[in-house]
Image (tube, rainbow, N blue to C red; front, side):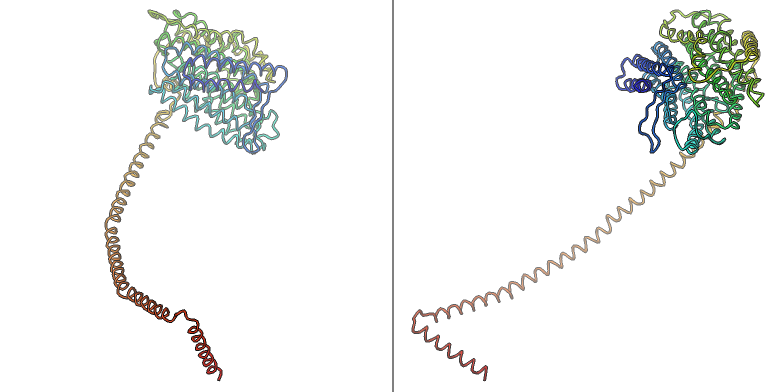
Length: 628
């Protein structure tokens, strides 16, 4: 349990520490990545022994959150950690003189934690949360240099297109939970999902993994720093879509797999052609990433998730090392444009050698790691039933891969490049780059064991192997020769710019939204003006109410006051002349009566007895008169 928490929380804690302290942020990020790597190694060791690390905690009502390091999850977590740590090492050197370090390092560590959470999520709700955090971190990282218009536009484009496609994830997860009655991700679910649920998930994959027609955001995202390109848009983030397909594969009905394979096949060909016609080394690699992810989607559609997993692992190492190599050229030559990179390989021989090794692996040259994974994809296409067109699509895609890599080799090596006066020392960059190149070279040793640990077996076929080798060698030779186009026309530009329809993303999405925003702004201004006028009218009414009625009320109050004053004066006169005089007369009468009573009281006994006798006689007379 501690290992699974360390794997996720170490980079997240590093991200928080970077934001708070803002000191030694590169090394803090590297420490967080190392902690995540240590946790993933522990999880992988447990998986080798057949143990599944699990952790449950409170989530939604009757839907617990689950972290689960299954065999496949442990393998993917290890791959993510190794690649990310290597890229962090590289980034310490790359970002040394660059601006936007705080945003970069806090965002990239947040992304790593979210990616590990996605890989290790044992329930669909937690998976969606990780998916969304990754999208947010990607937006921040693509826009690291936000003060540059290109970077800001690229971040907005990536965010917009992914948000549209992410609706499919919400619908798909909702369908899965309704169908199974549980949010848990099961290796052997009791019930699958409908074709509609599968297509909803496929929409999310098309956005996140830059499949046609959502592929253009990935090329635009190259406006960010090269470590971002290597981590987010070649090795891990875009692979999240394929990880979604691998986790949900047991749920898919057979009739839905065809659509997954169809999207993959179309993407292989169209984005592969885009890579061939590209004039920028990073954009070429971005288009290549979409194409290679198409290989994985096709393998899943063909019913061979093992082939997709093998190529996912191999591609992560190959493409991240290719991007890091391209970053070295960019730092040295201050450009990623092919025209400005001509012959730079002769000056940067170490970078060119590593780039060439990874490129040959991607083209499928043995014994490099890409040869074995590409052979698995070709085998999946060859043995797919009933989609017989899968194999030709994969074979043509392999040929395209070799062409654009051969063309890149030719451009980097041919021609003359003027050396810099004082070349920068890129020791950190070379260390991270060469670590991944070493994994590409030694990949044939660990690819099979990793896939088998995940519970799969890589498919192999001699016909597929021979066909793949032929396509690789022919493509490399053709690409080496065709290092530059003889002429450029509309077709060339159409391929290079990712097949813009009706003017492309700018005309179809940006301008309509800008027009909508302008219209909304006019409406808002009208509403604000209306509110202002209404407020002004009410203010005038309030002033009137505060002025005219106030005078009337004051007049009435004054009149009532005067009336009350008159009453009080009359009352005072009445009191003085009536009540007071009456009270004075009463007092005088009482005083006279008292004076008379005092005169009767003589104090002589015989007189008092006489008065008593008189009184008794008077009383008897009265009684006699009463009863007669």
